[in-house]
Image (cartoon, rainbow, N blue to C red; front, side, top):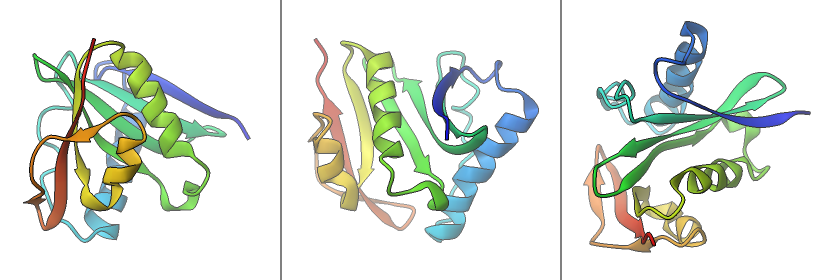
Length: 145
């Protein structure tokens, strides 16, 4: 088993990888979580966006995207394929993302059931929970500096 995380801009994604990335997000967020939402929101293609892709023996099993919101970076679309869960792969993705963030401030909107997990990476709630597409989320931030 060879697990590796690669970082790509949209322009660096080959068509097959882009397809696999969007398919994985659809499989989990739209189908598994029964949450039809506009996944293709235009932010994937922004020049500053970085896609972290987690492969296990060549198969895409997880991903997240790192967005530049100007005053802070934003982690989003954190996902691990159902068949790859329970192995610490989401933590591996987060650790890679935080290495890429460095000392900058970083935000995310955590599904409320995962807020404690994100707190383990230094994130703290910055406001009340809110409903996004039928799933409760909590805004969280990790200070920079």
